[in-house]
Amino acid sequence: SLSGYRSSVERSPRSNQLLDEHGATALVYSLRGFLFFGTANAILDLIRDESGIKGGNYKAILLDLKRVTGMDISALKTFLQIRRICEANGVQLLYSGIPRGTEQRIVMMGAVSMEKGKPLFFKESDYAVEYIENVILHDLGENEQTKSVASYLQELLHDQDKVRILMSAMDRVDCGVGQTLFQQGRVAGHAKCFHAHQAIHFIGYTPGKTIRQFLLAGI
Image (cartoon, rainbow, N blue to C red):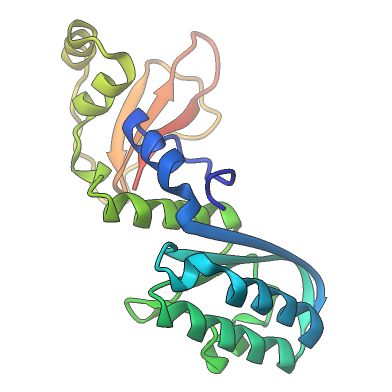
Protein backbone atom coordinates (compact mmCIF):
# COMPACT_ATOMS: atom_id res chain seq x y z
CA SER A 1 0.00 0.00 0.00
CA LEU A 2 0.98 3.67 -0.10
CA SER A 3 1.87 3.46 3.57
CA GLY A 4 5.22 2.01 2.50
CA TYR A 5 5.35 3.23 -1.11
CA ARG A 6 5.71 7.00 -1.46
CA SER A 7 6.59 9.32 -4.31
CA SER A 8 9.74 11.43 -4.42
CA VAL A 9 7.77 14.66 -3.95
CA GLU A 10 8.80 16.50 -0.79
CA ARG A 11 5.65 17.68 0.91
CA SER A 12 4.77 19.77 3.92
CA PRO A 13 4.96 18.11 7.36
CA ARG A 14 1.17 18.23 7.60
CA SER A 15 0.72 16.47 4.25
CA ASN A 16 3.32 13.84 5.12
CA GLN A 17 1.48 13.12 8.36
CA LEU A 18 -1.83 12.70 6.54
CA LEU A 19 -0.26 10.40 3.94
CA ASP A 20 1.31 8.31 6.70
CA GLU A 21 -2.10 7.96 8.32
CA HIS A 22 -4.16 7.37 5.17
CA GLY A 23 -1.67 5.82 2.72
CA ALA A 24 -3.30 2.44 3.18
CA THR A 25 -6.23 3.67 1.08
CA ALA A 26 -4.30 2.79 -2.09
CA LEU A 27 -2.64 -0.40 -3.33
CA VAL A 28 0.37 -0.85 -5.62
CA TYR A 29 1.06 -4.07 -7.55
CA SER A 30 4.37 -4.46 -9.40
CA LEU A 31 4.08 -7.06 -12.18
CA ARG A 32 6.82 -8.65 -14.26
CA GLY A 33 7.42 -10.99 -17.18
CA PHE A 34 4.88 -11.88 -19.87
CA LEU A 35 1.30 -11.59 -18.63
CA PHE A 36 -1.22 -14.22 -19.66
CA PHE A 37 -4.48 -15.41 -18.12
CA GLY A 38 -2.89 -17.16 -15.15
CA THR A 39 -0.71 -14.31 -13.93
CA ALA A 40 -3.31 -11.61 -14.52
CA ASN A 41 -6.00 -13.72 -12.89
CA ALA A 42 -3.86 -14.03 -9.75
CA ILE A 43 -4.03 -10.23 -9.39
CA LEU A 44 -7.77 -10.33 -10.04
CA ASP A 45 -8.21 -12.86 -7.23
CA LEU A 46 -6.19 -10.70 -4.82
CA ILE A 47 -8.29 -7.64 -5.62
CA ARG A 48 -11.57 -9.55 -5.58
CA ASP A 49 -10.74 -11.00 -2.16
CA GLU A 50 -9.59 -7.67 -0.72
CA SER A 51 -12.34 -6.78 1.73
CA GLY A 52 -11.27 -3.14 1.86
CA ILE A 53 -12.28 -2.57 -1.75
CA LYS A 54 -15.92 -3.53 -1.30
CA GLY A 55 -15.88 -1.77 2.06
CA GLY A 56 -15.06 1.52 0.36
CA ASN A 57 -11.69 1.83 2.09
CA TYR A 58 -9.62 2.30 -1.07
CA LYS A 59 -9.28 5.18 -3.50
CA ALA A 60 -6.89 3.79 -6.11
CA ILE A 61 -5.04 0.71 -7.34
CA LEU A 62 -1.84 1.06 -9.34
CA LEU A 63 -0.58 -1.68 -11.66
CA ASP A 64 3.10 -1.04 -12.35
CA LEU A 65 4.09 -2.76 -15.60
CA LYS A 66 7.68 -1.52 -15.79
CA ARG A 67 9.07 -5.07 -15.75
CA VAL A 68 6.36 -6.55 -17.97
CA THR A 69 7.57 -7.72 -21.38
CA GLY A 70 4.13 -8.16 -22.95
CA MET A 71 0.61 -9.51 -22.46
CA ASP A 72 -1.96 -11.51 -24.35
CA ILE A 73 -5.65 -10.79 -24.89
CA SER A 74 -6.71 -12.88 -21.90
CA ALA A 75 -4.64 -10.65 -19.59
CA LEU A 76 -6.27 -7.55 -21.07
CA LYS A 77 -9.73 -9.03 -20.49
CA THR A 78 -8.76 -9.77 -16.90
CA PHE A 79 -7.65 -6.15 -16.44
CA LEU A 80 -11.08 -5.10 -17.71
CA GLN A 81 -12.67 -7.18 -14.95
CA ILE A 82 -10.37 -5.53 -12.42
CA ARG A 83 -11.36 -2.07 -13.66
CA ARG A 84 -15.07 -2.94 -13.36
CA ILE A 85 -14.60 -4.17 -9.79
CA CYS A 86 -12.63 -1.04 -8.93
CA GLU A 87 -15.03 1.50 -10.36
CA ALA A 88 -18.07 -0.32 -8.97
CA ASN A 89 -16.57 0.46 -5.57
CA GLY A 90 -15.32 3.99 -6.23
CA VAL A 91 -11.71 2.96 -6.86
CA GLN A 92 -9.54 4.24 -9.73
CA LEU A 93 -7.36 1.80 -11.69
CA LEU A 94 -4.05 3.31 -12.84
CA TYR A 95 -1.10 1.98 -14.83
CA SER A 96 2.58 2.95 -14.95
CA GLY A 97 5.56 1.82 -17.02
CA ILE A 98 3.36 0.35 -19.75
CA PRO A 99 5.24 -1.64 -22.44
CA ARG A 100 5.52 0.04 -25.83
CA GLY A 101 2.44 -0.48 -28.00
CA THR A 102 0.24 -1.67 -25.13
CA GLU A 103 -1.45 1.59 -24.09
CA GLN A 104 -3.87 1.65 -27.02
CA ARG A 105 -4.84 -1.97 -26.44
CA ILE A 106 -5.68 -1.23 -22.80
CA VAL A 107 -7.76 1.81 -23.79
CA MET A 108 -9.64 -0.08 -26.51
CA MET A 109 -10.40 -2.83 -24.01
CA GLY A 110 -11.70 -0.24 -21.54
CA ALA A 111 -9.39 -1.61 -18.86
CA VAL A 112 -8.24 1.70 -17.37
CA SER A 113 -9.95 4.43 -15.36
CA MET A 114 -10.33 7.81 -17.06
CA GLU A 115 -9.82 11.30 -15.67
CA LYS A 116 -11.27 14.21 -17.68
CA GLY A 117 -11.47 11.96 -20.73
CA LYS A 118 -7.87 10.77 -20.49
CA PRO A 119 -6.65 7.33 -19.38
CA LEU A 120 -4.73 7.24 -16.11
CA PHE A 121 -1.41 6.17 -17.62
CA PHE A 122 1.90 7.29 -16.12
CA LYS A 123 5.40 6.98 -17.53
CA GLU A 124 6.82 5.92 -14.16
CA SER A 125 5.32 4.64 -10.92
CA ASP A 126 6.64 7.70 -9.09
CA TYR A 127 4.32 9.98 -11.06
CA ALA A 128 1.40 7.62 -10.52
CA VAL A 129 2.01 7.49 -6.77
CA GLU A 130 2.24 11.29 -6.70
CA TYR A 131 -1.17 11.47 -8.41
CA ILE A 132 -2.66 9.08 -5.84
CA GLU A 133 -1.15 11.08 -2.98
CA ASN A 134 -2.74 14.23 -4.40
CA VAL A 135 -6.13 12.50 -4.58
CA ILE A 136 -5.85 11.38 -0.96
CA LEU A 137 -4.80 14.85 0.22
CA HIS A 138 -7.55 16.53 -1.79
CA ASP A 139 -10.21 14.25 -0.32
CA LEU A 140 -8.87 15.05 3.15
CA GLY A 141 -9.19 18.78 2.47
CA GLU A 142 -5.43 19.36 2.27
CA ASN A 143 -5.00 21.64 -0.73
CA GLU A 144 -1.32 22.53 -0.94
CA GLN A 145 -1.64 24.61 -4.06
CA THR A 146 -3.46 27.38 -2.16
CA LYS A 147 -0.54 27.93 0.22
CA SER A 148 2.01 30.69 -0.20
CA VAL A 149 5.78 30.40 -0.06
CA ALA A 150 5.65 31.93 3.41
CA SER A 151 3.23 29.22 4.57
CA TYR A 152 5.55 26.47 3.36
CA LEU A 153 8.54 28.10 5.05
CA GLN A 154 6.60 28.38 8.29
CA GLU A 155 5.78 24.67 8.20
CA LEU A 156 9.45 23.88 7.61
CA LEU A 157 11.07 26.29 10.05
CA HIS A 158 8.39 26.83 12.72
CA ASP A 159 9.87 30.28 13.28
CA GLN A 160 8.07 33.41 12.09
CA ASP A 161 11.14 35.62 12.55
CA LYS A 162 13.22 33.41 10.24
CA VAL A 163 10.40 33.32 7.71
CA ARG A 164 10.17 37.13 7.73
CA ILE A 165 13.93 37.42 7.18
CA LEU A 166 13.82 35.03 4.24
CA MET A 167 10.76 36.65 2.69
CA SER A 168 12.26 40.15 3.01
CA ALA A 169 15.39 38.97 1.18
CA MET A 170 13.40 37.62 -1.78
CA ASP A 171 12.69 39.48 -4.99
CA ARG A 172 9.57 38.57 -6.95
CA VAL A 173 10.06 38.05 -10.68
CA ASP A 174 7.12 37.30 -12.97
CA CYS A 175 8.41 35.49 -16.04
CA GLY A 176 6.74 35.15 -19.38
CA VAL A 177 6.16 32.05 -21.47
CA GLY A 178 9.45 30.71 -22.83
CA GLN A 179 11.60 32.93 -20.63
CA THR A 180 14.73 31.20 -19.27
CA LEU A 181 15.33 31.68 -15.54
CA PHE A 182 18.30 29.35 -15.14
CA GLN A 183 20.04 26.46 -16.84
CA GLN A 184 20.94 23.11 -15.38
CA GLY A 185 24.63 22.89 -14.46
CA ARG A 186 25.20 26.66 -14.59
CA VAL A 187 27.16 28.14 -11.69
CA ALA A 188 24.68 29.74 -9.30
CA GLY A 189 25.02 33.37 -8.28
CA HIS A 190 22.29 33.28 -5.65
CA ALA A 191 19.55 31.07 -4.31
CA LYS A 192 16.17 30.94 -6.03
CA CYS A 193 12.68 29.96 -5.02
CA PHE A 194 9.88 29.79 -7.54
CA HIS A 195 6.27 28.73 -7.77
CA ALA A 196 5.42 26.86 -10.95
CA HIS A 197 3.01 24.14 -12.01
CA GLN A 198 1.37 24.29 -8.59
CA ALA A 199 4.62 23.47 -6.80
CA ILE A 200 7.16 25.31 -4.70
CA HIS A 201 10.77 24.82 -5.82
CA PHE A 202 13.99 25.90 -4.16
CA ILE A 203 17.28 26.30 -6.00
CA GLY A 204 20.15 25.81 -3.58
CA TYR A 205 23.20 28.03 -3.65
CA THR A 206 26.73 27.04 -2.75
CA PRO A 207 29.49 29.47 -3.84
CA GLY A 208 31.35 28.15 -6.86
CA LYS A 209 29.06 25.13 -7.20
CA THR A 210 26.48 24.31 -9.83
CA ILE A 211 22.77 24.82 -9.38
CA ARG A 212 20.92 22.14 -7.44
CA GLN A 213 17.13 22.01 -7.30
CA PHE A 214 14.85 20.25 -4.85
CA LEU A 215 11.08 20.24 -4.68
CA LEU A 216 9.60 21.44 -1.42
CA ALA A 217 6.02 20.64 -2.20
CA GLY A 218 3.82 19.83 -5.15
CA ILE A 219 0.22 19.05 -5.84
